[in-house]
Structures are given as C-alpha cells and as structure tokens.
Image (cartoon, rainbow, N blue to C red):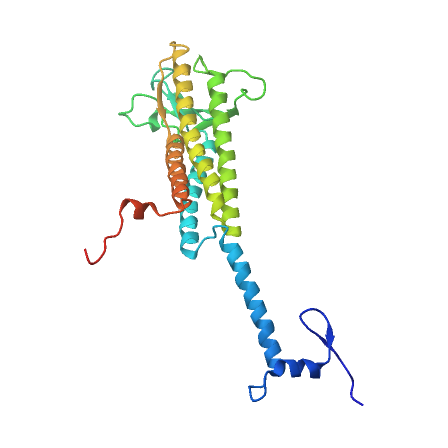
Length: 287
C-alpha cells in the first residue's frame, strides 16, 4: 500500500507526481527530465525574478564600488572640517587682549582671551614674559586664570574687559552663525550616511549643499567676530590694548575652507557624468 501525495503545478492545481513526471519527460527518445526538469524550471524562474529585481534597483542611480570609495574619501575630508569647527567653536582662544607689560606694576600684568561663549582673564608674571615682547602675554604662560561665561545669552548684559564694552549683537550673531553651521554639518552627515547605506547617489546633492553652506557660514562667523573685536577696541581708549587672533581662529578658517572643498567634491560625485572626461576627452589611438 503506497502512500499517495500530490504536488501543485504553476497554476496551483493538484496533480499526481507520476503525471508531473510524464509531463516533464518530454517527447519519446529525448532526455529524461522529471524532477530535475522541474528544479531547472524553478531555478530559472528565480533567476529571472532576481534579474528583474536587479534591473529595478539599477534604475535608482546605484553606486559602484569605485564611487563608494570616492564618497568615503570626500566624507573623510568633510569630517576633518567638522572636527576643526567643533574644536574652534568649543574653545575660547579666538582673540587675546593685552596691555603693555608695565601698565599696572613691574611684577605682574593682566591678559585676556575669549571666544564665542566665555572669556578668561589671566595674571602673568612679567619675569616669565619674553624681554623683547612689549605687551603682556601670551596667554599660554603659567599664571592665575579666571574664566566666566558671557551673559549675552542669559540676561543680555554686555561684558566689560579693560574698561571696554562688548557689542552683544555682533557676538550673539557670530555664535548663532556657528550653531547654524553645525546644524548644517549634521544634516550633511546624515545625507551621506543614507547615501552609503542605501547605495543611492541622490543624497549627495543635498549633502553637498549643506557642507558648502556650512563652510560659508563658518567663514562669515569669523568675519562677524572680528568686527565685534574691532567694536570692543573702539568703545574706550583709556587702556591701550594690543589684540591678536589666536589658534581657535586658525581652526575655524581652515574648517571653512575644508568644508567648502568637501561640498564641492560631493557635488562633482553627484554629476551623472565625469567632469574630467568632459573637459579632457580621450583621443583615439588612430589619430
């Protein structure tokens, strides 16, 4: 007594396995197919479906391995700009203000350095300063330091340094530009991450716009801050001061340039053609 079982054909009807083997056997004298022919048919259908899915995916501007490597390299350049921006915005060594060494007494002198968020006053020993230097500083010398956050963003009060008053509107504008540029960097990084994870080139264009705008805003923040320093120096002339931009400003300037370069690289990678081939077409070997 043999157990009976059934298989289904392509339309979902129940058929006997013997009948299925007879249908798949083909004409007399030909090669016997049977279950092997059914397996080949199923594998062929799967292959056809897979090709169809790959064709549908390829129409969405997918990226190759070479394009993915170029995108990762450009993303590394943009990340360098982001790190430099965060380093410059988070530190208070944007500008140093220093009176002459002998303005107060012969033993100590006072210097001040500040950034977007807080300022620090530091008392230095005159003996530690370079004899050829006429003003107090630099701020990296050892001494007693006192740092306070500005009240621009809480009570709206101006800061007073060496009897000079800051212009809070310019300082707040510089800080807001820096924050907005950081927001654009985050949005650009999200677009690049989605582009690499989904393998779609469409997200490169908004990422390029975000990084280019963030670089422009960083440089604009630097200009506004410099104007605020000049306004501070012009507010009172009782105490003669020497001012110099410090290393945080250098980080911000380099960050703006690197971000703009990274955005331009993303924009070039998003083009449907290679700009090098358009500008420098290859010549035929026969010519």
